[in-house]
Amino acid sequence: MEIYYLAAGIAILVSMALGVARAVLGPTVFDRILAVNMFGTKAVLLVSVFAFFSGRPDILDIALLYSLLNFVGVIAALRLVERGKHYANSFSREDLEDEEENA
Image 1: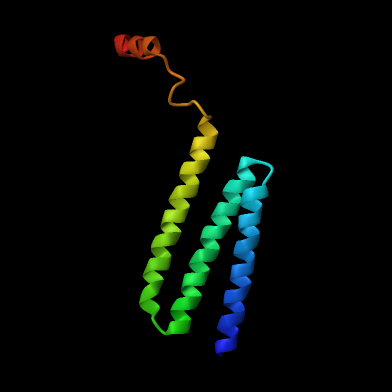
Image 2: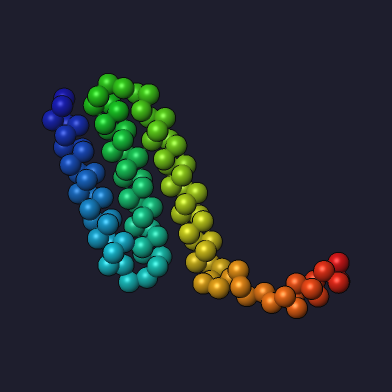
């Protein structure tokens, strides 16, 4: 049974290496974000395999927490890309003052 855990761990590590390669070589920012998301998902799988291999299912809580952080991080990165590079600086003081006067 241990050989299956080892094979699963090696397969996950290989797919993580491919994800890192896509993150580094990705032609677009969306490819890179998708690769980072895949890396995070594979990390959760690797932690889960380790938890079952070591006989400590309480480590699965760490995997769940990491998956939540991975999801929030990817959503934040996509929102940043969606808004553009200078989204926070796109409003001038005059625009903000006009909005305050109209309110």
